[in-house]
Image (cartoon, rainbow, N blue to C red):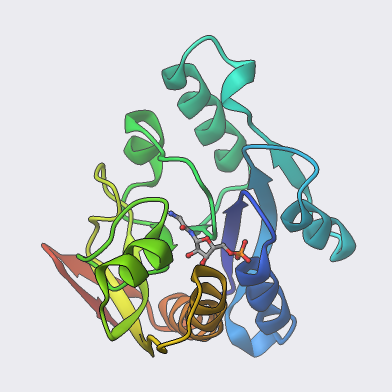
Length: 202
Ligand code: GAR
């Protein structure tokens, strides 16, 4: 059975594109059934439109509270009956209502090696700290900020002349490969979350 993915984006959507490209091969085991965003007019949504995939937008500002937005987002995602929800550069924290429905099957990718440098500025914070390696982390979303159980990590060296931009771009190359590989395996082989440990395969 091909797993149904809903992907949420806030920006350029290169991680989304990597999944779309992989999923063009039916043997990948997963297909993107919808792409959602928290803002309009972004390249991530245009990538979905070019691929002929339905899109939706749920903006925080269109709702009277964060909680109503969270519920509306969950409803929009739920309409596509996903097996997995992938946050791919989605710059909002999902809340209780969302996690009540999709907790355990929502993945997020973060541009740092958790538990280091959580939050919105993983590459900048790693560079400022002076670490020599950083990377990307795929995790099962929980109520914290980038704290969920880890599915996969990819290590990336920090170069002496890196800027935030060059470092983030190098991270994103490794991140896309990790995301495609892990989501495909989770779709094809299944996975189990046991406390903080995530095991791929039956
Ligand atoms: C990715 O590096 C992703 O890890 C990061 O945004 C980038 C999105 O790139 N997400 C976060 O920092 C979430 N806190 P993309 O839009 O080209 O896929």
